[in-house]
Amino acid sequence: MKKILSLLLAFLLTVCFPVSAFAEESETQTSSTQITATDEKKEKTIDERAKEILNSMTLEEKVAQMFMVYMPSENATSIQKKYQFGGYLLFANNFKNNSYKKKQTQIKNYQKASKIKMLIAVDEEGGIVNRVSLYKQYHKSPFLSPRELYKKGGYNKIKKDTREKANLLLDLGINTNLAPVADVAYKSSNYIYSRSFSTSAKSTSKYIDIVVTEMGKKNLVSTLKHFPGYGNNGDTHNNIIRDKRSKKTFVTRDLLPFQSGIDAGCDMIMVSHNIVECFDKKNPASLSKKVHSYIRKEMNFDGVIISDGLGMAGVVDFVGGSTEEAAVRSVLAGNDMICANNYKVQYPAVLKAVKKGRIKESQINKSVLRILKLKLNRKIIK
Image (cartoon, rainbow, N blue to C red; front, side):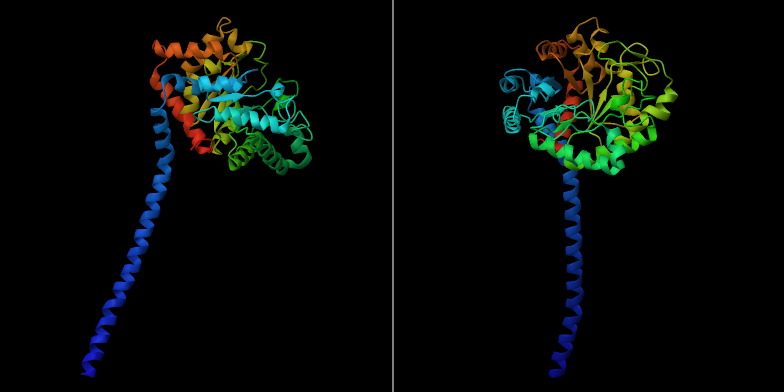
């Protein structure tokens, strides 16, 4: 009897352990499958959520989402409540006479008025283009230019400055910086020289990679500008500028920092108002379908493309002085967002162009999806 019991026990042990081992292995495989499924779900979430939000929006709201509006001088909160713009662009005068806490509160109020949280943007490049750090209530001294920073401490100083800048802006409620400048000047007499990092495309590419990467770590929206690169050209704030350089010059020089920024995960690209003849002899880059197609197809960028300011002479004079036409043609060219200097006439003009069929609603939908995905990626909306 004892012998029979011993044999039975041995048999049970032999059978049970493999089953247990199999069960453990099976559980591990199931767990692994669940993790993979979860990862796939996460990858789809932003696209699905963006489409869900898009489907809930009216045409008026979708068009408004494409507007980065120059900060209204008065009643900014009520204006946002009425129109639901995609963003506000703040300038130095919007900070000058406000305390730190007051500006924080104002920005919070803009966001409270928004069904979809806004991009609150500034040009805080450092050097001659600062908006916030010009005033001591925000920062002890204005942020230095990229060139000055590099002279003081190389790329490590650039990293530290980018983090410090991001911390300040985000604490105020500013989630978007229209920076870094990816232009490569030729010499010190060039218009863009003081705003650029270097006359070397290779060095500028490294600078862009560092800044975009550090901004991304903080979830501060980055913007490469001014595509396809100013180079040695004049200022489009005051004139229509024609760039007669060869395509080879751009491919081997000016476009390299932009590609570096795209590879580093930049959020937006700002297009200049220069007429760059090797891309499009007839239109400023900001109004050129050819330029926008190049960004999408050749540069492989599917983020948000934004126009430079639509109050600049380089674009307004080109369309005969009509800021409304500048806005409509900016959208037609392929800009997802436009820097609107006069929303009172530009917003109705774009909306009318969509309703009349001049701009296809399918194009509007594609642009708004990109904007929504950007906001979801940077945790501006959920």
